[in-house]
Image (tube, rainbow, N blue to C red; front, top):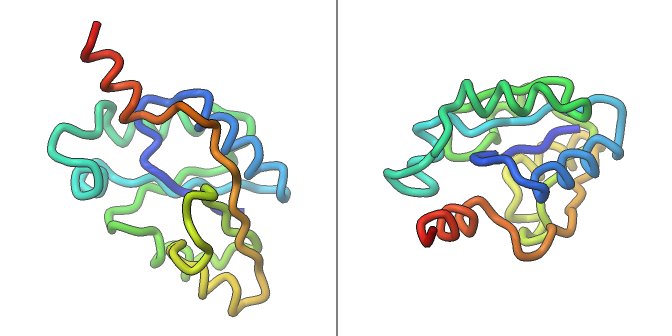
Length: 132
């Protein structure tokens, strides 16, 4: 299996997603956006934690078997190299919007979407902290 994200300021929504992703198979590889990739997606003030800090936290989870840091805006190139059996992303995306979906589907794999834990996101946490 493969999932990806920024994983900046790990929260219970991330944990839920990783556990559910891992339950879909035997080995979970997490694609982690590099610091520069996060800046492109989230703005100049992100990430809060650097890529090595984020990778270390992710690798500590029992559900995670490997972490790959990628520089591009999407992990499509990594997905094309490893061709996972299952590609997992949050249900806020349509399957056609998920980077690498075509590679996985064309090679006999599946693309799964997971419902997210409502009311929690890193951006929301940052805003809450700013108000303290």
